[in-house]
Image (cartoon, rainbow, N blue to C red; front, side, top):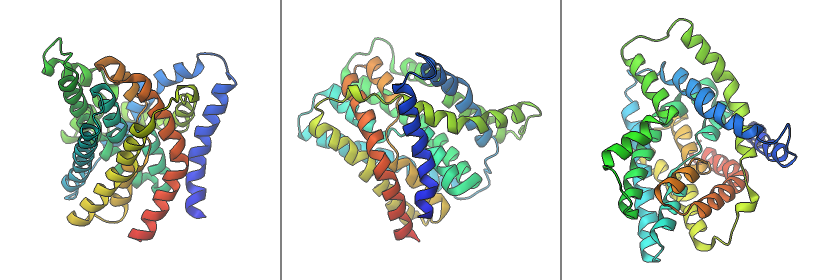
Length: 308
């Protein structure tokens, strides 16, 4: 019951976002504006605020990154193998891949803070610092290679995707200044902290407002394979790697969150830009978000029972 009570407010905010959007409250276009505010201002401030204070002397940081990158690569390999065996067209296969390895950073950090407090949020920011650049580079390389639509060098494409991503730039800036011992920065760090405090409640409402039930099509087996990768393979690899590397307690719980939240809404934009199946991607995002209302609490409860 304590776990349920801790998680429930997060998902009630998602549901509240859905209802507000359906009622067009406060007005048409409002939530699209909130999306931009969160993506370009609030969430970068949160990531900068947390990555700028990470303790690099912690000997576990390397193993933590290895756990998450291993989960990314193993999940991707299994999903692409299944797509090949089922003769899934490349655009659909890359949308399955995105739905399997991408994660909703906003929900992950909200759950980490709600369940595990400030220390949990720091580990979640560290995981985001590892996975956001890794996932973006991996997906751009894979999608360009599979779709054969390259009109410029792969290096330019990757650089373009990374440089225009404010989340990645905030992480690089936070980690870089932290490594040079220049943080906290007077005034700037305080402003980032204040913006960070406003981020998570607002972003949960915006994520809920972005759910589009009308995008659901007859997605069939491809959706269930993507959900299999997102909700079973990824967290399964995280658990195996944590056991192998001797990571337990709070870091293991937070690492697991990256494998049980739904896929990222940004996957739709990348599918549209690089030749994926954008309509199917929209359906995957919507269905996974709906599923997570049940699967996330069950997965966390199961993890607490298994890991203690």
